[in-house]
Amino acid sequence: MFALAVVVGCQPRRTVEHIKPHRAKASADGPAVVPPGVVLASPADLVVGLRAPKHVLALSSGGLYGAYSAGVLNGWTRTGSRPEFDVVTGSSTGALIAPFAFLGSEYDARAMKLYTGVSAEDIFRVRAWVTIPFRESVATTAPLRKLIQDQIDQPLMERIAAEHHNGRRLYVGTTDLQTKRAVIWDMGAIAGLPCPEGCTLFRDVLLASASVPGVFPPVELRIEVDGRRETELHVDGAITAPLFMPAGVFATAATANGPNFNPHPPPGAPNFYAIVAGKLYPEAGPVRRRILPVLGATTEALLYAQCRAELANMYWQSRLAGMRYNMIALRQDARLDADTAVSFDQKLMTRLYEEGLADGQAGPRWAYVPPALSPGDGDYARGGTRLRTMPDIHTRAP
Image (tube, rainbow, N blue to C red; front, side):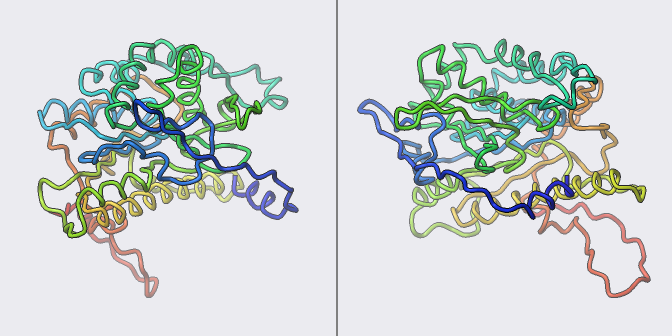
């Protein structure tokens, strides 16, 4: 992957047709509706009509580790303290959980079934090996498309559309292969479109957000811009944003808190929550001095670092907005590691779900600072080569 990035980076730049920005149009009887596929002129367009956010949730990418996130939500429900979220965002596997998290605890069982009742055969089919060099991906996602269609039915979308009208927001992230940028889809606005158009687009966006490039094929999204029909190719939202929260959401919270908000939010202040599907750091281990193992190790390090960077970014944004920061991830010492994030081993997913359930019922076990600032991260600065092992510290800020 890194070799490919270097080669692409050294290529002469091609002329790219710039896409004209558009603004959402407000309707007379409700919040602004963002047309599907439109590039927004301002991030503020996403939050027109958003009610003052008190509780917002970001669900990360992570493949089969999404079972952990689903377990955390169910465990949180069992504590009796889980709130109604004003905003829910999801990327990749987080996108598949997001509609259920958005609609509330009555959908916990459906989310559990999605992660503990499926196998690899329910997600993808590997193509004939002889054809793979001539294909866009190793596998086809026809089973996942059907699974999404069965789970995301029209009554569910009608409920999401109704909540959107009440000022709540559900966002899903994908990556546009043409622009190489993240695209945020306002799923509540899409759910309000008539079927089959709205239903098809809603499901296609979820499929695209979970489509790991190379493993799964890109998803074609047919859109209309200025009366002209176009086709975009979208893939895994984790490529550009492993988790996210539109800046306009934090700005709306800051405005609602007033000019004299407390930079150290007390109990009762609005809350930002992040549930990480997996660990914050990759597992340490030996790496063979060969091209593929070295590229694999560096790519893994990059993906984990990108997630931690986003968590730190949202920490400061939430603090500036006067919101309390809450983050939870699979404990680093959990022996629940998969060969790949797309192996979809049913027994492992059940164990991940149970781990999340326990963490959710225990509070949940929130950390109140991002991993880059946590005292449990250790100090990796070196002034020489004589080192000694320090005990792990798992202190969580009050």
